[in-house]
Length: 338
Image (cartoon, rainbow, N blue to C red; front, side):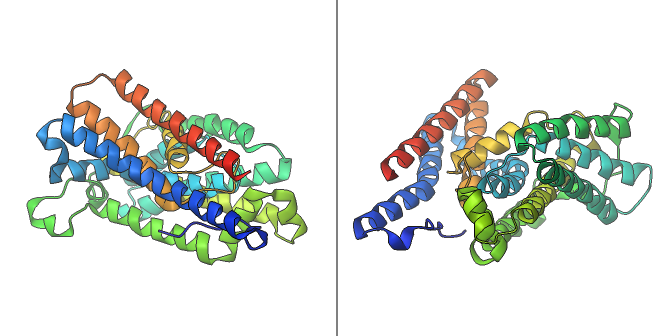
């Protein structure tokens, strides 16, 4: 997606220091890809023959889309040095808003989709405003938003699922029929890829992207350099809400109902995808490619374990072990650089 960003003090380091920084940076980028290849190869060998089939690869891609698009927003937020625990609630609210607009307001599918995504944007804007105006740590604010937004979703849906008429939205992540196999992947997956390219370009080529990295690396230094820290935080959390809303749209495509109890715990999967992909909870590091690879790793593990008939606790155990190893390798890399 985008080449790794060099540290701010790169130009002042020695030749050997530069080599070490380049090596560590590229290991951080390529490590998740190597891990994905190893895990996929392992399941291809020990799993059933159908694991590496084209149909299963399409299924893995469809399963990754929801976490993947949410991970794009979380990547921006975590590079900034923040976190957002309200992802699952925002996704659930988005499905409820879309279903309500289709069923009760009887709007078109496009208007309903835009309305659902707009709800996600509003949630992100509120979170960003509370974090900056109240000067409260993101963990506490988004923890509160997680409960508030889930409550709003349940109230809007009267604590039950909202059935919605079938529209073209269900085709976003539906399995491709034979006559549409030429496009290889469902439209929703292509949308995630397009959005990933946009976010990668934003981080690498725009002033906003540079400011996000600067704040995540050292907020005080960024402020002294004239970076509008408060504004960038609000914009970043709003963009995060946009991607969480799009994840809700993807989930609605799969469920075709508005479910206020959906996506419970999704925030853990999204954060894990970013961490596995090389993102740092301390901020200042992360990449679009790494986050998508992290989401793919979790989908491959779940698909492989499921096809082998393993219990859910085995999937959770393996995924948790991968997360711990990813964090341990990240800490080891930082120690070598320091």
